[in-house]
Image (cartoon, rainbow, N blue to C red; front, side, top):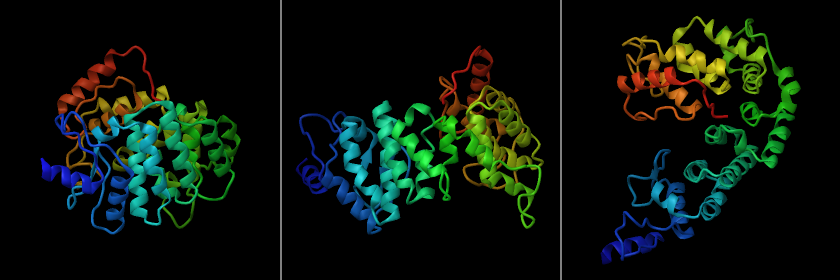
Length: 325
């Protein structure tokens, strides 16, 4: 026990010896966070997204239990300074810690504060921050101040936050999004294949308009995805675009894939979390889980056919969906 107390003191973590460690997690301190971030900056340890932020070559760890036990506003005070760090690795760790705090303390004040912090940092590092912002999928996550930042960025010439514009339901931006639309049936660049259309601002703008309920764009988005001849591309990438729309028509389209027994070919290879022979239904299941309140949780880390059967049964029983948006 003395050795444990000494190690924890050196890390800047406080230990209470009157109760088991499992019931009273170590408390976050500025010294502990600073020590860990410094090790990350020097490349001694590496963090990762997930249920814990940890490193294999160090005892430094910030667990979900630690974050739950801490006042979220205090935790955010500890993590926010590092979003401006000169090290991109440290910044990404800070984004992860902010995001995880917002997930574990899912109240509007906490989530809105994190979104505002990330949006301000997005001005400098848009590609880094967009991944962290992608978990905030409710209009309520965006305060009036956050919406003003999005409007300002939409008026610029940089990497515009088009997806966030749709999530935040900025209907005053519909004309601006309309200016960005393209004819997706035509090549966008003579030197590129037509599949490049899925990577354009014009396509993202149509999706954002669909997210805000513009029926013409909802129908066109789904029709365009359904007409994509490359079935692997459609399932691997474009179903996620349909899920982003968060409209009843999009949910029905994803349900078709949930009800399908088709699979990726065994020789398709392993990529981005997709496995050889994986069922299309598993792809749809993961997306529907993100879209619908009360969707069966299943096992997020082990794909089983029982999860698919339970999801199909649940969908069949619903008379009304509560879409997360």
